[in-house]
Structure formats: C-alpha cells, structure tokens
Length: 588
Image 1 (tube, helix red, strand yellow):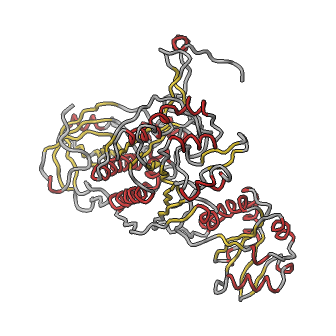
Image 2: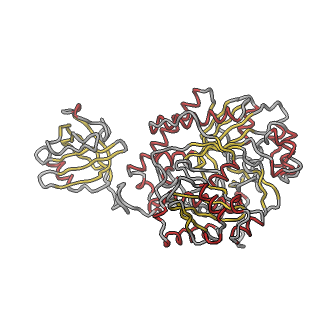
Image 3: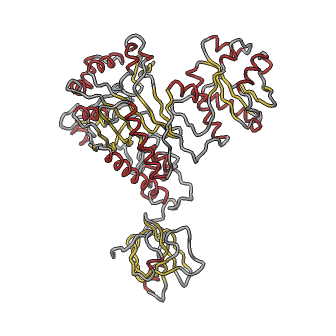
C-alpha cells in the first residue's frame, strides 16, 4: 500500500495536475464499458475515481472486480470534471482522479444493509453490525460533533482555571438511589468494588483537598430499571467549585452551553435565561422539565367552579382537588373523532376523562355547558377573552395527579398541531426543588437529588418538624424540554450531613459504613462548595438533532442493556468464577 497523500475530502480545482494517492472504501461503482467510475469514501468526504483502459489496462481490468465497501488504494492525476458532470453537493465535486494504479487492500462481504443515510435500518441490525453503521455519514458526523464538543468544553473550562482530574472507576459501593454495578475482588474474596454512579463523593473530597475548580468528562454507571432511552453507562461533564453560591455555578454552566451553541450551531442563546421555581413549573407546565418553545400553559380554573353543579368537578374540589386545563387554537381542527382519540390518550396517561369546551363567537360550546351557571360561563369566557376559535381541555383531581397528565397532553398537542418552533432553542433553570420525597415502597424519605445536597438556609427550622417542606439548594438546566444538567450546593458541615442522613432513615452506623470517609473528610476544614453535572450524551443528541442517545454513542447498549455486537453481558468460565470465590444460584 502506498502512503496516501490526501484524504477523500481534500482535493479541489487548485490541485489540478497533482499526482495523488487516495485510500478508502468504495461507496459506489459504475461500469460504463469504456470507463469505470468509483466513488471513494473516507470520513473526510468522497472523491470520484476514473479507470480508463487507455491509461492503465491492468488497473482498469482489476477495477471491474470491485464492489461496494471494498478497501482500496489508488494513485492518479487530478483533473477537472468534464462540463456538465460537476457535483455541487460535494466539496470535491469539481474534480476527479484519473487512476494510474489500483491496489485492493481488502474485500468486503455483501453488507447486511446499504451504507447510506437514506435507508431505514432495524435498530437491532444496526447495533449488531455497529462497525458498518458507523461508516454512514450521519453517524460519523454525530461522533465528530461529540469530539468537537469535548474540545470546546475543555477549552472553555481551562480558560476559567478549572483543573481536569480523573477519579476512580473502581470505588466503594454507596447505594443511595440507583443500584450500583458491582465488581468482585479476586484478592479480597467476598468483597466488591462498585462502578461510580457519579464522581460525587470524590469531587467533594477534591474540594476539601483545595482544588477549588475541578472538572472531568466522566464515565458513569447505573444499574437502573430498563427505559427506552437510558444507557447503563453514560458520560457526564462533571464540575465542582469551592467558595460559591448557586448563581456562581449556574452562570458557569449556562455560559458553557452558550459557548457550545455559538461554536457548534452559530446560535446566540442570549443573556437572560429564565429561572422558574419547581412549584411554578408544575403549575404552569405539569413538569419540572418544561419545553418553552411554544406558549401553552396550564390554567388553574378551580376558583371558577367552586360552586359548580357539574359533579365531575364538584366531587374532586370537595376532596381537596383542583380543576385545571389547557387551551389551544385551531378549534376547527378538533372534530368529534379527534376529540375522542385525545380522550383515550388522556385515559392511557391515567386520567379519568377529559371535559372540553370550544370558544366560538364569544360563546361557550361543549357537552357539559348545560350544567354550568351563567356566572361560570361568563368567568370562563372572561379568562379567555380575545382568544376566539380555541378549544379548552379540562380535568379535575389531585394536583399531583392531573398536572403531570396535562403536561403530557400539552406536549402531545404541541406536536400534533406543529406548535413547536424547531428553529428556536429554549433554555430554562428550575430551582427550589423539594429536598426530599417520600418513597412509599421503603416507607421513608429519600433525597430527590442526592443525600449531600444542602437545604436552603430559610428552611433549616423545618428539617425536623416538616421535612417534606424543606427546599434544596439545587438547580436543573432544561433545554427544549430535556434536563441536560443538574447540580446543587453541597453540605460541608459534618453535623448537618449527619442530620440529613438521620432524616433519610440512614442510621449512624450505616452512614459510617457507606460514607464514613466523606464524613471524616468534612471534619478537616471543608470549604463551602457546589457543582453541576451535564448529561453529555443527551446534550449531543439535541445538538445533532438525533432521535436517540444511541445515535451519538459509539457503542451503545440496547434498551434492554444488551451489547448486540459483542454479546455482552456474557457467561464466564468456571475457572474465573472460582478465582473470584463466586457461585451462581439457579434459584429464580
């Protein structure tokens, strides 16, 4: 094989007459009898190669045996394409190589699918033959985008004085949240390492050690229940800072996102990022991950129907529930059939049903209007004054049940009515999260974020008397309805950390066993500190416009956590099991 002089994306008219050598894969080949044309591809682009028997009969004859995805090396001279044959879609589309030699470096079996972006491929097949899937231009663009973003993150944080420090992959098991992946120790039989769910405790210890600005693009592992778009291993941009408050961390994080969008998409996200308290986000959007690219909010209508005769509303209000709804334009779109489909969709989400109204010509229409007093009708019309030709979908019940359903309904309608501006980017901070949530299965409070998140100073008095009302010094960054980053100010005081463990029903001995090293470190001059972690895979997915995070990870697992290409997880030999002192129970 001759050493290549250029890639398949390099050559242009300025290279006319040059003697070159290109290596790559055959994307297409065309035998025109007197000439053979080859589209040669590498990750840089495509160049057309022409084999002419009058130039080199031997190379021409060999070229007739070429097929798609063969790997070849060819030398030749750059010339301008004949008039009328220029391909304006390619950087190299004005030139071609008149081949002088051809070397077949490797043949290729008939691939299980065409290496092209314009075909539909079953995902299991794509993952089984990932090395072929990754040859496709769209997949290579995704991984090159990922590579570019890695560099932008590092450049941005280095300029701000952050130090990149690697933390261990083999660590102590500290399960509090998702399950750990466990790694048995051969040297210490019966004992286990865990793969890190995040570098949380290590980065806090780095703050105690005096590294006041740390970051890491870290691999993390969580043995979670299977979900459609989750991966058992994922990547975080992990950031921690000392002597900071919430606004300091939030400013660093949002400016990083702005830098990425400017450099990657040439899009300015502006200077003012909205900040919405958790409770307000639930009331307005039914979720703590609101997509603000379209202006549809949830309306609390309870006050209008306090004395209503409509039993579906009255019964729920009497039990402490609320009446809420969402309204959209294009009421003429909603035929009775479409409304029935929407009601069925809401029921699948957990709703008992939907009650709908249309506002037309300053009149309220709908099957339940006859049950409402004139005062209720007037108030409802007044609330939507000036918003003719609208339809309002309502439901009643406990707020914690119906608001998330309305939030899902909001997104469903936005997609169905094309309300989402795909050219717009929505970035928003959510703050004032509850510090704790009650886990009925464990009959105890659990940390909403993690047990090292500090409570807000104004809620300290509630810790022991009304822990459910304590708000955390936590913050999430949401992009187009996706949580891309989350963080908090940490507890840096041993007594407070122990008190929080007690609230979480983690006994002193258990806390010492799981987190004793951190509790001890906190006693040695721990500075106030906080940080944030970005879900790097999801961020890249959004930047790439991909449908799944599997499209932006080189070797992902399936939704059921299988690696179809190499067969992981797989059985291991009995010898390996014996070395680890492990036996497998057949009990199911």
